[in-house]
Amino acid sequence: MDNPPKTWYYHRMSKRRRLNREQYVAMYIASVVRNNMEDFHVENLTDAQMKELNPIIRDAIYTALVAAKNLDDEDARKWVNLYSQLIPDYWENPTLISDYKFCVRRAKKCLQNTSS
Image 1: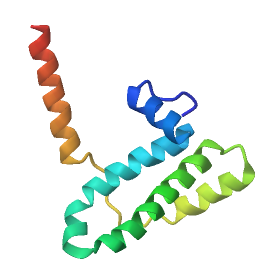
Image 2 (image 1 turned 45 degrees about the vertical axis):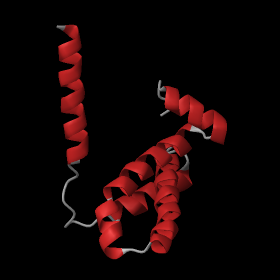
Image 3 (image 1 turned 180 degrees about the vertical axis):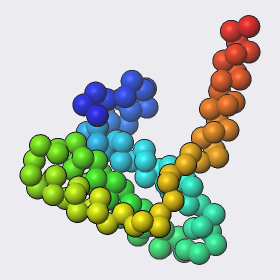
């Protein structure tokens, strides 16, 4: 994570908001989480509840990224070890969300068509 991603949006966003790399990645991940919670939000949460939940998610992701980056620091290592032990055994392994799979397939198809 030492090198920022080579995307136009990262440079634009980080400059405007003065984000460091971990802050940007946390915002990106939180955005993916938030957008994939939309149906759950509509069915179960008010906008006010979602507004309260969003910064909790962003800050937790940012904290995890910073701690994971700083494993040479004893406190960060202890924090990561503690939270790693708190991962429940019953959690399923992560899988790619369908939107990602669809977008990647579509992008590959578009690239194949333009190179033909």
